[in-house]
Image 1 (cartoon, helix red, strand yellow):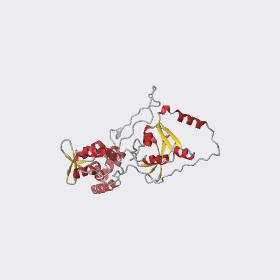
Image 2: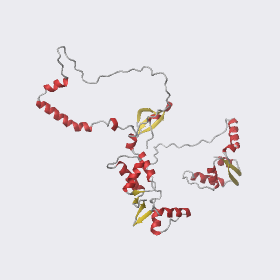
Image 3: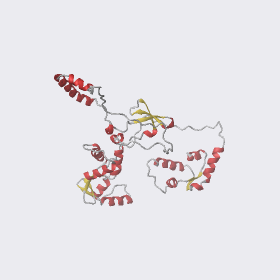
Image 4: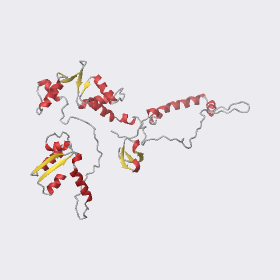
Length: 345
């Protein structure tokens, strides 16, 4: 925006001073811009720089940048004229939900070990490989073994691990983590189990941690947040209105004046039922077991999930409260505190 302003003011010679060594070096062309998100911005700066006769980028320490502080102070002191037109900023609103970190696959469709496999097979490098990349491929190829068309990773104990691509790695993690006899282990144990099963890829441990973090069962059964939302302070005085009581649990069968006990109502009813009616009643109870199992509620106790959801944040209320809706967008009357929810992956 500052370069556009200078172009609109017909400035032909410009000196750009910044306190970010990374951005200045990238603008000068000394350092490479590797972040995909920053590449379009660097290209825009290069295009705008061509419209000046001379432009220079200079790095200056933040505590030496008195000119920027003076300009900011001066701008805050100037009165704002009412007839000045300011171009509005157009903000696009996304009406559909955005999902991130869903699937990570190779952008070119080739597996991660393609260059290593090609080097072991033909002793050739990829077409656009530079000197550093060729040296890295030679170093990595020492730890791999090619048998036919299958690439294996050598281990320290002289075992061989089969190399897999991103699609096979996703299937392996799903089967080991939540398949048959899958104990839903954490990411570190999941990576170790896959290694013992004989599979390998470079980003195994990182992918296992991300896979476990996105597991639905692991998220709803994870531990509750027991930490208080704010710091607790000890009280010198005892809690007000503290009361203690005792409940008697068990049947109470008081004795009569002559020492005779009144039997419970259940014993009286069972004593009055005939044998045929008792067998019929018992069979009806057994037949209803399957229906009760089908209509049973969710598990309770330690087998019940600790978290409900997932939900979407519809509105942020005052004092740290959130208004939630279900995943289908249906409005519900659910309002909770922000410290009682966590992110769902």
